[in-house]
Picture (cartoon, rainbow, N blue to C red):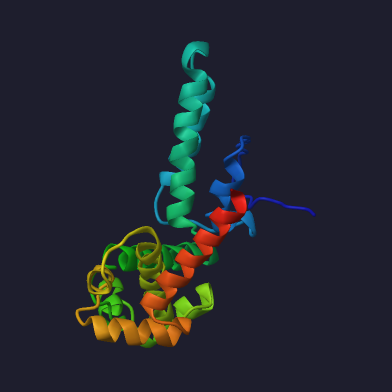
Length: 210
C-alpha cells in the first residue's frame, strides 16, 4: 500500500506503542480495536496529547515511566470518550441494567415488587425491559421476582422455626394465604409440607451417618 502526502498541505503521523495486561481491554472500549483508523477534527486535543507524549518520553529518567503512564491513561480516556465502541457500550449498559434489577429485587425482597415499578426505577419502557431481561437471563421479570422470594422463603422454612405468616411477610406477602397458594402452585406442595419434607430428609440423613 502506498501513501503520498499533499504537496501544499502535507499530513504528519506518529506512533505510540503501548503494552500491558490491561491495554487490550481498554482498547476494546474504543472503535480502534476493530477499525484502527478514524477522522478527528473537533479541536487540537488529540494533537496536544501526542505532543505531551513526546515530552514525557524525553523527560528525566526518574520520572519518565510515571510521565508516560500519565499521558497514556489520558490518551486512552480520550479515545474511549471520542471514539467509543458502541457494541461494547451497549453490552455494558445491558449488563448494568440486569445487575441493577437483580439488586433491586434483593433489596426489596420483603416488599411487594411489580414489573411496572422496576420499569419506572430503571427508566425503561416496560415491554422493552421485559424482553431485555428475558433475553439475558432466561427468566421473565415476574418469574425472577418470585424466584428471589422463593429462595429466601425456602431458606427460612428449613433454617428457622418462624411461623408461615412471618415468613410470608419476610418475602413481601401481606396475606399469608396468598403466599401459601403461590408457594403451593410453584413448588407443588405447601410451605408446611415443604418444611416437614426437608426435616424428614435431614433426620433420615442424620440416622444414616450415626
